[in-house]
Amino acid sequence: MHSSADASAARPGMPCPALSDRSRQLLAGLSTEDRLIEIGPSYNPVAAKASGWNTVVVDHGSRAELVAKYSTAPEAPTELIEEVDVVWRGGPLDDGFAAGDAGTFTALVASHVLEHVPDPIGFFQSAARLLHPTRGSIRLALPDKRLCFDLFRPAATTGRVLAAHRGDGARHTYADLFDHVAYLTRLAGRAAWSREPLTALSLDHTVEQARGNAELGAAAGSAYIDCHAWQFTPASFELLVLELGVLGEIDWRIDWLEPQPAMEFLVSLSRPRESFVSADALQSRRLTLLRRMILELRELTDQLLDTLPAS
Image (tube, rainbow, N blue to C red):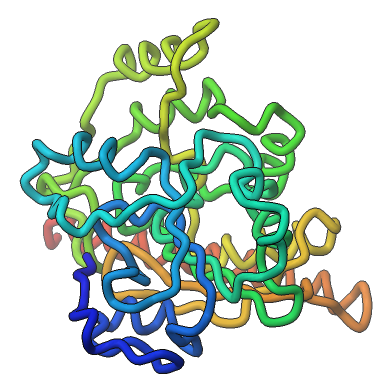
């Protein structure tokens, strides 16, 4: 979680002090002079305006709506919710900005947002239109599916992301709405955890409840239902970005990716997309990432084996 720093400590052009280690990583190389976009900060802003950051806040509701939403949640410090500059109700992200904003932002920050977006390709394309063409970067915090309630769901594939982009891009699929509920898993009551033995796992819902959620979301004229549509491990996300770039769907590459002790990994992307000296070099890189994905699953298997009684 994040907390606001004392606004008096921020100085123009200088990195904001009193940041958490996590926020410091996500904002590395940026200063309070840079124009930033933060999507969905809610009550946990990474680049808080109150701390001196020049941030345009994008969220799914106004500040008043967010305060009302979280007013009964004891873990939500609603005083940290900042004024929302752009209310995103769906559609291309850049549609909510003025035409003159195109290409003027230094970074887009999104913590635990991309996994909710029905059309990730559209997200990356909108970011390309909003961010400076050479200096612009995307800073993401993404849940590692091995360390959260997505434990038993497979990693997102390029094919599925392409299919979502070919759809209406506005709503989650029946399958995603079903799977999000059917396989939502907790570890000793927790929705996220560190690298530890996977004892006391439990499923939150029945398959009947999962189907009910999917039917509700698929009904004609129904309200939007949110879910985790996409699951990632570090290597699977690298492969996804690589392949979408090769196909010309996005123009982003990964500059750095940092696994965290618990729940998530942090990543920074910039342009242009990755290029290769030969087709063989590309295939070799893809195979390397696919092998790493298997090794990541081996780590997960080892965590499960740690729960078995000694023979």
